[in-house]
Amino acid sequence: MSTEANGLHTLSRAQVEQFRRDGFLVVENLLSEDDMAAVRDRADLIAGGRAPHVPDDCVQVEPGLRDGPLPEDRALAVRKIYKVAHYDDVMLAHVRNPRLVDVIADLLGSDDIKLYLDQILMKPAFHGSAQAWHQDSGSWRDMFPMDLVTAWCALDDATIANGCLWMAPGTHRWGMIPRHLQSDLQNSFVGQFEPVPVEIPAGGVSFHHSLVFHSSRPNTTPHRRRGSAVHYMRAATIKDETVTDAPKVPPFIQVRGQSFPGCV
Image 1 (cartoon, one colour):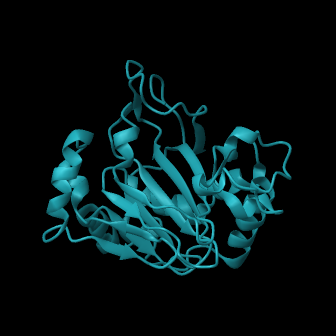
Image 2 (image 1 turned 120 degrees about the horizontal axis):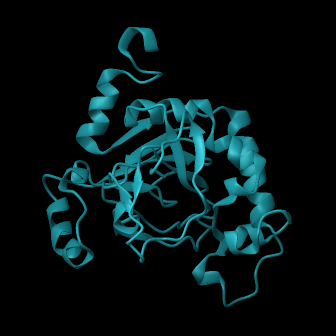
């Protein structure tokens, strides 16, 4: 449906309402084969230590593989690479891909958009570790409103066996839950907030709210599960400089539209 028809770039009103209800939305076949090939190839180049323009501290090896000899191709042992859009033009182009940003604009209700952070999550074969239930804004405690959106792009098929995302629909409506209460509240996931696996074919993208509870399980397969997680926010977001225990991230990149004085 066109922008002229409903005020949106690419989504339907029903899709926007689904996101508001559930806290996540899957859009299949959003990325082209060329889009995916460019990101996969550049991610492997960086993870393999063959991109001198990207600092080493942007690359994190899977914890279970750090103590043993790494494979000849180091990329096969990497858990994630992050904040690379600040150093690499291919990754910056991915962050600014209109296919992604149009959906983000529809979900945020704004064409003034900035990048919070970008990551490639690589889940090595047999060793890709689980990620416990969490809210992204539980870490991003200095960003207000707590209304960021992540585009999780499947660069390989994401399945239950290789550690796809799981979502607890509707939990973004709880607000930010203090960590010491989360284990008790997770008992509520069974029933009203029954977790669901988000299996996505390569090229599909899952968009999730920064307050929705989500997790992933280990990769038990002989193949990697690569995904790109790009975290977006409105350019009118406010950063609380008094919060000192939030992640230290690079300067925020303008993705679309304009910036505003006193905002990120």
